[in-house]
Image (tube, rainbow, N blue to C red):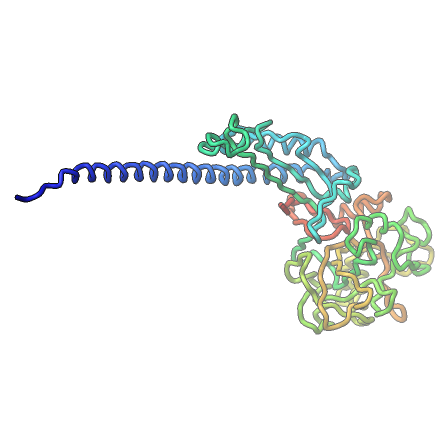
Length: 420
């Protein structure tokens, strides 16, 4: 007789029960992982949208922290614009985003090392270059980032809120002009930055230093009235191209050819820089008298030679007794290059552009001196004549979006950028 195993059905039921438990556990685990993935996605979405809000608020603050007509610092207006901009935006699980005044700070942002110093004089427009805004989703003024499973399991640190804390930071930067269009630089003359400021050629004291002539000299007797500051005369700066400790200027054609030729330098006198020039670009420099180039510059200023009847300069000041030349002012914009203390604009080497400066040429002399004499112009100089010259010849026309990035040589940029 065949034997029948009566326990087979019971074993199969046990197996089915075990499988059901495993399936249920797997479903729970998958749900947990899915919920956690959803929470992680929500946090990243919150962080991304918060950053968009933060970036917009920081740009708004930086764009309104300087009144260029002064110039003066307007931090109250900047904070208001940052708050208003944040309220126009939303983040995940949050309506209009709130930013407090305490979340908005201002100071000097240094492009060279990325440092942000909030301890500077916040009334000085020459040092207020950065606006930092923090957007906080921490359950106080704005809710935390929403979280489902993490909140239920108490992984957020506060199960009552059931969300994650997400904080974002952004810095808007409004510095000094670092982007120059074709033809914006008038002459093939580059200025040594270390002769303009004390902070390794990129400091905040250019305007103060500009009131005391660098490498001072006198205008030629009888050429223009001398000794009366109200007429723009008196001691001026002599641009020296010789490779000596007195050197404060170099020759450049804004190219990368090691040979800085006379024709290319004269081409800059004719048309300015051929292409865009930005702070950080490298250009070749040269030194020496460049007699024919200096003569060409003099002809351009006074309307002689090939410039006959079409002087670049103007008769701005009263003529002195016995004057032989009535042209006495030519305001130009010149590039500024990295320090030349030891390099002395050596031919064949290239050096970095650090910005641009406004310069009033008062006189160009021939042999034996071969000098370009003039003064550096700062937009907030106490001398009204200097301010008028800067505004009428060097300030960018309204609507020009010149970008920041250069050192402080008085040419304030208008376009703000994000640096963090």
